[in-house]
Image 1 (cartoon, rainbow, N blue to C red):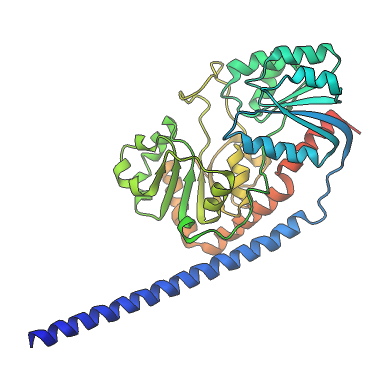
Image 2 (cartoon, rainbow, N blue to C red; image 1 turned 60 degrees about the horizontal axis):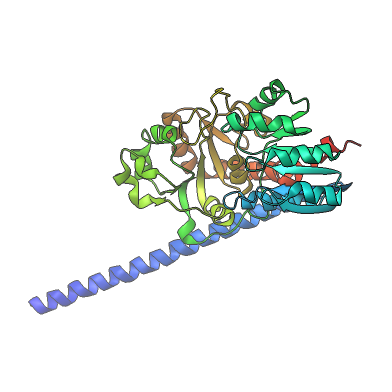
Length: 380
């Protein structure tokens, strides 16, 4: 009797196991189909967004000075170089570690464009200007290093900054030609893709755990710990309840743009949280210049067709419309409430994400940014 009971028990367990496998396969098939269908929709919208997009080619020779700083700047170097290459008749590329003035004096470009420039000797800039060569710089980390950039900017003929609040600041430093030019998205890296199952989550955040971010996340940790959440970046062991989130955090790993894009593609909601202008970690902004402009992640997340839930920056409305192609929060509770809402309201979430992707690919790629820069440098 006992033997028969054990056999029946094993049989029931085996049946339950087979049913579990079948359910898992069905769930996996359904999830794969949903992502595949969504990917197909995104590709259709993407084709429509870029249809007829044309960048004029300027009759100009540009010497582009890349940062040469390696990751995480190397993808930016490449994206800007590619955008320039498509829009000028001649492009020469070098980096800040090379004898740039010597190169420039030898080839006599129409302009030298320096990216970032924090590790580029201004004596090189002065030498080029003394030789009658026009120079421009595009600051990529404002306002966090303005104690340094304030001494760099006046050496250039033209100054571009990704931070709106820095335009007047550089003018006050004696720079007559200062322009607001945010960074953007590289559509070669940040675009819709069909990610692996392991890269799919309900909620995703990628970035470093600066102390002010930690202070905010401490209020939402218990909520996120109960959700299908993925966080990647350095210093997240600073969280007060790190033990609750440990299994959901990929600690200390830098991801390539394409890896990052895959995580964005696999998420239902991607959180964006801008670095505070007065953050103590790696900050050289003693003037206390505020931060009004969206960070590069704003455009990169949107380009992937993910619903972006971002904190508020004053100038974000110049690029997206909250509630239409992006969603904002201003407190921990509002973040929680909106995550709950958009996880349930799937169709609304997808439509906002789709509109964000469309607008990004139409207006906020590096191709569009370089088009704007060249229209200023070489007006028709």
